[in-house]
Length: 140
Image 1 (tube, rainbow, N blue to C red):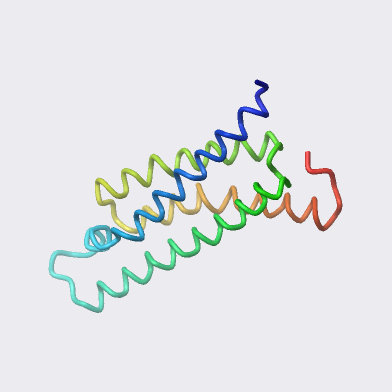
Image 2 (spheres, rainbow, N blue to C red):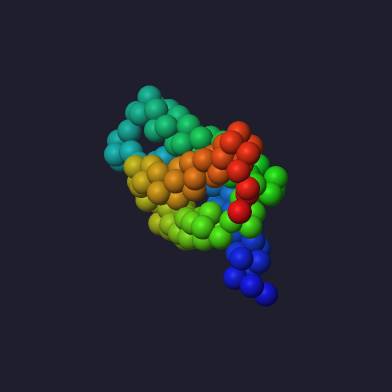
């Protein structure tokens, strides 16, 4: 099995792992929201932090949609650079978000993980989609 062909299942698995952890955070965000707040927080503070985390998780799901469309359409499926970037970013995100859930990290750490592990691969995927579909370049 060549390196490029082994990146395809690894990319799919890391994308799926990251997606599952983001959905898990959706379901259990109460503890993480409370970790972001002082001990004597008000209901308004709670709602504000919960809304911020909900927005971040929703944007993350939107970026997943971009990546999955590019991946499943074949635009970037066999591109080794995009595959390696995606595997590294989503593997890092899966590990980091696991710590985020289990150790109840503060909410601002989610934004760092989001910027490094979701935005960068999605932007590169979007560039690939535009290049292949809009500019009619070869997918590889």
